[in-house]
Length: 267
Image 1 (spheres, one colour):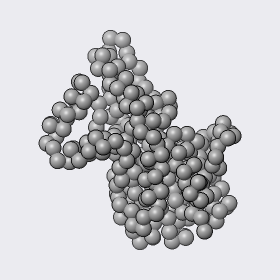
Image 2 (image 1 turned 45 degrees about the horizontal axis):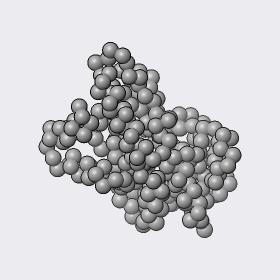
Image 3 (image 1 turned 90 degrees about the vertical axis):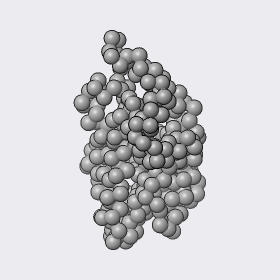
Image 4 (image 1 turned 120 degrees about the horizontal axis):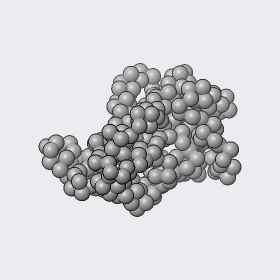
């Protein structure tokens, strides 16, 4: 029997790549979008889901369960980028980012757990970010929301150990997707004390995304995780130096690591 997979944010970017790859591998794949009607040519089934709307989450999960009788894999992929000096990012945008990157995934997990517990099996993969392992300048809110999801996963795993439900994180680095188009950018304010440095870092961030690797690498890693009987807690995928930056943070004194980041961003 083919495994049934639900991918939040499956209409574009990494989620679309994962969905199409798994579909080609024979999985029954459902992706989600806030407006699935905007993607009539989608190669996977799209259902309506807004991670900020609990009812839409419940409705989407119910639709999949009613159609397939089970749900084997949840991939919490929906997320949003955000950049800016923390001092200048409007509070409403900070809260919106945490709603999408942390509270939304938690709500989706809560919706699928009763079904997975009933079938005594399940796998949940939370797509986080290498940025979630470190506080990055002018990406601090994004780093914090993704880092929080990493820790939530660690706690969830221990709470779910008696139910044959596995949970893991996959932290991608920079990949060539349209994430920059959907990211909230705090404006570079003329006369702001952050004007020059934020403007410079913002350009560097966009260049990193534009020159990023093919998101198919993430799809291959997802496929590997799904076919691993006892997944690890944390996985990373991306350029060598991006993954190695996590190792450096673990072994270097804090201020030495901070200096490396300052030099990288020319701050």
